[in-house]
Length: 98
Figure (cartoon, rainbow, N blue to C red):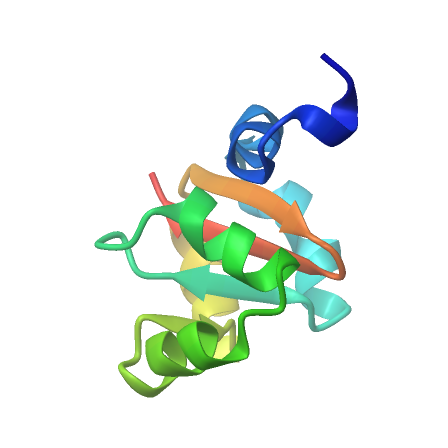
């Protein structure tokens, strides 16, 4: 099976991993960290970003389930140093509390 035959969700699932704030901080500084509510499937959200599924992404954003990380998030993560699940949906880094 070639890379082009692998379903997007399978590929993204293989690319997810745990990350600490210290590793995420530089991405936050670039403004590319997006938080995903724990009620959502991180891989499904990443797939919607990659597919540029604007209606679905906007629905999640309007519902407050997906949002760009803000300075308050960074301060909280710095204080707690939680382990987060992350996946890249270039240029974005999507994260979810583990």
